Amino acid sequence: MSYLKTTHELYKEAALTPQLSLCCVTSQARFLPDLVTPGVMKEMNYGCGTTVHFGDLNAGETVLYVGVGGGLEALQFAYFTRRPQSVIAVDSVPEMLARAEENFKLAAQVNKWFQPDFVKLVQGNALSLPLADGSVDVAAQNCLFNIFKEAELKQAISEMYRVLKPGGRLYISDPITTQPIPEHLREDERLRAMCLSGALAYQDYLDKFVDAGFGTIEVRARRPYRILDKGRYGTGEDILLESLELVVYKNPVPEDGACVFAGETVIYFGSEEAYDDGKGHIIQRDVPLPVCQKTAGNLRALNRPDLFITKATYHYGGGGCC
Image (cartoon, rainbow, N blue to C red):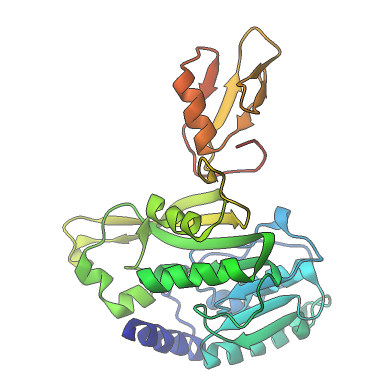
């Protein structure tokens, strides 16, 4: 697994000297009242999206963040938890942990509500997390899983599943690819470490979490991320990478498959006040109802003229049924 050593060295460099071209460091942290983010945290925002979804977070929860980087998202999680060791930040690179510790001290100087001990920094590996089974409510990783090859990815997801409490949720932001990535790029260890060549296709990526036992998946966002252009990367054609934001839940996988919410919506406009499909879904007339992919498919198969089912938008806003 020499590629993991390459990754370690790259992020050691990024800890000692912020890498402005690494991942999406140009993306701006979102505004929260009374939250001031030190500039160095913004420079070290080595992610491809966000894992901090404000409407979901509860003060009493314990959060695991794997791959702390400069600490920006761990600070945002701590904004909601606000108690000692309520955010556990695990990283395998000692230099990154040291830089994050410095950054949290800076954050405490400019945020009256924040104390550095709100975040517990722990040296550890995503493939063998130093936490007990079922010990956290929330886990998160940003632009980490795509670095792993098949066996290590399976292990990393399994570890997240293990440490989550039943009903707990995993927040993810990772690149995916819209076209096959040539093998010579997949085997380039530095490009993989830079989150450019290890991405999976959308459905392949989702399947990894279902295979690990996660029963519900919510696609919160899917956006353009990077282009692997044929001129620089020696591909036959330009390859679009997208940034995918997911929330996956540690609940049982139903017999008919996982519930995947990807922005599909049904609208009933028939003669009755509501439509009952006989499978537990009651759809009020003229009221848009978000549905999972399974339900959307079943409703389409009915070919009813009074049911309108949208295509997936890959931006799910909550609610609905499976």
